[in-house]
Amino acid sequence: MAAPYPGLVSAPSPVPEPAGSHETAGPVPLVLAGRRPAGGRGRPPRHLADLPLAERRAVVAGLGQPPFRASQLSRHFFGRYTDQTDEMSDLPRAARDPLAQALLPRLLTAERELSCDGGTTRKTLWRTFDGALVESVLMRYPDRVTMCVSSQAGCGMACPFCATGQAGLTRNLSTAEIVAQVVAGARLLADGRVPGGPGRVSNIVFMGMGEPLANYASVLAAVRRLTEPVPEGMGISQRSVTVSTVGLVPAIARLAAERLSVTLAVSLHAPDDELRDTLVPVNRRWKVAEVLAAAWDYAAATGRRVSVEYALIREINDQAWRADLLGSLLAGRLAHVNLIPLNPTPGSKWTASRPAAQREFVRRLEAHGVPVTVRDTRGREIDGACGQLAASASPPLPSAR
Image (cartoon, rainbow, N blue to C red; front, side):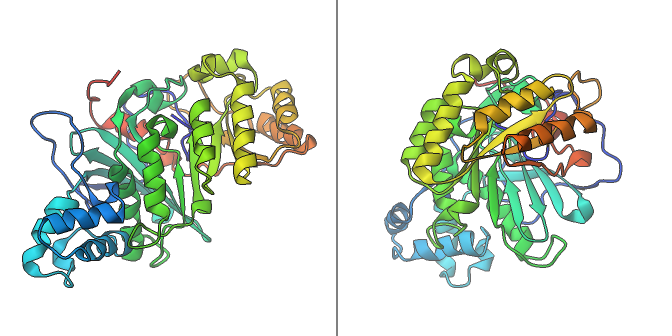
């Protein structure tokens, strides 16, 4: 898993219900719901978000409907954030159900929802059509609304301090399953069900469950769908999208060649190979120097500053000499460091750095001229680190590995 947005944890074991949080059981509005089939896992049903607009038109024409109905259906989903046919008054009544069955199957069921920060941080545990569990988080700030989305059910990267990584990989998500997480959040905002009044999703970070670049085709298609204008997609700016990775070097190069304007976030967590081999096992394949070289190539190709994610773990990777080493590696580069205070869980050997160590780490990076911020750790009291809520919900499905 790439660096999860609110924080990182190690234990995938059940977590006690947090005090003071608000929980909503069962489906939430815009449930985009489905049922677990008796036959087990398979490919998600085709959804209009999986297809470019031209292919949606072909499907509609195959149903004997005028091709422009595809644009109407797409405007409802991407512009009005609904898959409910009774809200589609511009479509002939007789055509609504056949069109919805062909292009708007319900993919995700809201299994559980938790909120904190006065309701402005909302975490949803989704169950997919085949019973897999994934999570998304909506975070409303005064100047923006960020959706943190999952790209896989589980994760195969096996980072030892990460709940998702320890749970293993179930499967990749489809393009539409990724997009549906954002559409669900957008519907809540548009309907004014998040404090602060009606609004819209402005930022998307692929920092939920999974390694996005290990599901390259679906993630790339989701980025395009989320950033294409309505009715092709949702119309969110590419510059407001961040795709994270633990360092899959060939995929970083492939993403650079796409010439998108999305931000690349590299989950580094250690500046030296000896420690990173342990914290991020994929480092045994692509070392720190190779990962950073790919990141600098991405920055050169896109003109976009690379975000370097670094989870501070007490007495593991927060030493002053590691801050200096990191600073020397990044000095003069088009990069910014996001320090992530670890979100510990009871019984875990991994815990957050002491405040003094965190301050010294920041000071030393700044002394090297490296921009650095400490991430806002929203969601601690609602199992905010990705994978933590899913782990406590039910036994996982058999791993895909």
